Amino acid sequence: MEVILLQDVTKLGKENEIVKVKDGFARNYLIPNKFAILADESGKKHIAELEKQQARREEKMLKEINSVVEVLRSTTFKVGAKTGTSGKIFGSVTSFQLADAIKKQKNIKVDRKKITLPEDIGTLGSYTAKIVLHKEVPEVDVNFEVVAE
Image 1 (cartoon, rainbow, N blue to C red):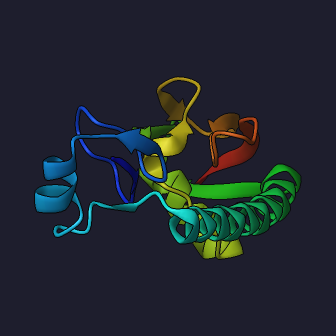
Image 2 (cartoon, rainbow, N blue to C red):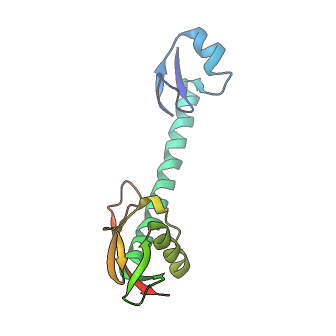
Image 3 (cartoon, helix red, strand yellow):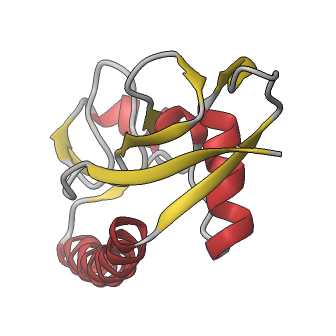
């Protein structure tokens, strides 16, 4: 029996994939637990419509990400840090601080785990960090300046 998976099933297949399974497995497990639907004409039309909707959502999201990329590239963000008398900062600037500065200055939320800082930043000055926003968008170079608070 052929079924269309509605979600990823371990050792069987990925979401929206058509797989061939034994009749009993489909009738007694996959279909009642809403893991799959029959791969008849209506099921195939349903999956085709879901894929169209997903493509539209993806296209809209990529447009939004591209507009955010332009803002990130064109802005130099200021990250405040406590400093001593010699201009050395206490501790170092982290990706969390940069993400917080981006959020406060341009109201753009960036996951701190997607930010790569160049090295341990222990002094005042200008630096460049790399941010990966999406797998289909190349990484973005973001300029930021560490200033005394």
